[in-house]
Image (cartoon, rainbow, N blue to C red):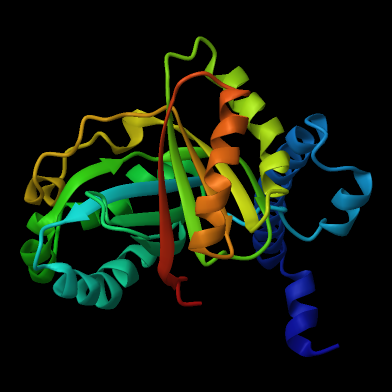
Length: 287
């Protein structure tokens, strides 16, 4: 044993500091395991996983969406600003967002056809509070010069943070079917459970690689910021749930869309706004 190690073992100040650090690590680990266990308990209760799956996946959550919340955004582009938008969003905007603590991954999709909401943007967050955290609001309230130029060209915004209800599948698909589910649900929790039970059935449809359901938490993203004031007024459209169905291609998801809506109608009543997008860009935080 070295002299330094021997002295560390005898010095009560070092022993106390080491015990405190160990306690913090164990506490953080306990919180993480509690959250992980809650996810497995819900999926097991719904009959979506069994004990053998839990044992096989004990190294991490069986969710292709990272974290426990996501921020979906649908919007259009003023004609003529598409090229500048692509450059800005790829070079500056997404890297900036992925630099905010709690942002785990970002994606940009483009509509498969001409649409008033040509762009779909998705950010995956560690938890729902990520999307109104001090770090995120600081970015929203200090837009860059490039953002000041581009943002007025983003129109017909629909934006709202969602708590992840369920996320199943593998990998990242090359295309995405989005469904905004709206309705006067008497019990959102029960509706969420019904959608979660339905997700594995959707995941078996041809061409589908993953299915995600999120419940809107509207107060998270209602805060007005300097960046939101740069854009034309956001749409007042609100929805109750967001369904995201990933697939191997646009053609496959367009062919599957009627089956998806059929399953939805048998699960929850309401209105369903659908769009199909192709994946244009995906970015993860630098390690």
